[in-house]
Amino acid sequence: MIKKLYENLMKLRLPNGLYIASTGEFYRQFCWLRDCFYESLPSLYFDPDLYVQTYHTILDYLKKLESEYRKFSSMIENPTDETWRHLHARVSAETCWEVHTYWQNKQDDICGELLYGISLGEERGLKIIRDSEDVQIINLLIKYMEAIEYWHHSDSGYWEEDESRGGRSSSIGICVAGLNAIQKLNRSDIIIPENLIMKGRAALSRLLPKETKDRDVDMALLSLIWPFNVVNTKQRNEILFNVESRLVRDYGCIRYIGDQYYNADYSNPLGNEAQWTLGDLYLANIYIDIGDHEKGEHYLYKVLKKCPDGNIPELYVNGVANCNSILGWANALAILAMMRKELYHGR
Image (cartoon, rainbow, N blue to C red; front, side):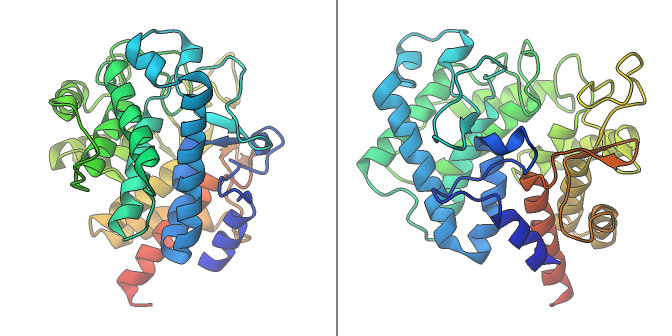
């Protein structure tokens, strides 16, 4: 099954190393940088050269944004809430350039994921950071995170929704994880401003186990347990209890209570939320990671038994998969859970 899942994932990979989000009619037009982080993770183990190419393309893209728009330095010099001035979460699959249409562009987790992904490669001995220009753009990204004050910035988060005043735990936590990871490389040429990580940790402690001050439980919080490992045991257990008791459904997890994206009944959204495969696959990886392999395999095969062809969809509505199949992000999570399960069983 791993081979089938990986082959399907590679169908989404572009020659430049980025990944389209899905084969769905709309999603195939774009590469979300967040999705590229997750979709590239299996190649770190199967074909590291592909992983290196993905991050070289992303670093070159960031440098081009700075060269043509002063995307980062202008924000550092003059921070603003204007949405278009922020780092966009998606690029055109055709042009590898940011998409100049309005939607909720402020998605701070992107910054943390890029730093985390760079660090993962470097830790494995891969030459992700090539030269002083790469170092310069990484430092600008870090200064940009400071300028927007990521620790309480009103962003749109994983689900690209209305900006949440006071910040989102998932966005803040992923930024903390990325900054931590890049700091652990112990490079003297990469500068983390004093207290930048501490400010994020303090904000996270105030918000958790909530996602926002107004949302008690959200599937995005699972990412803070795995892969980003930025919560303590008490916080982890609270998040897991809240998600499993309130969001788990027959075909996956709902993102949060009342979610209207692909809702089965917009006039009565409560109880009709779309059920996402990502939720079960995060839970599979989390439980395998903490040693509860039986529970981890339960969540993994709950997804895979519905997808014998290895094409994992984004979500189900009334038991029917939507058009975004495969969803590369979901396929990548399934591959990672399968790999770690097989390592446990000695295969």
